Length: 30
Image (cartoon, rainbow, N blue to C red; front, side, top):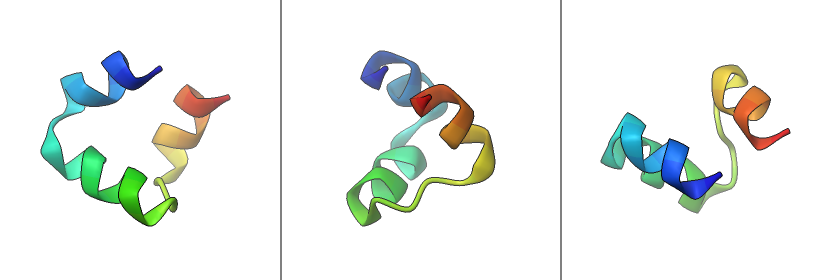
């Protein structure tokens, strides 16, 4: 799960920190 987010870049990490990922990431989370 996290490995996929890391591939997207640090921008995703910021979203994860806010616990409010965009719709595309929501699919990855689920």
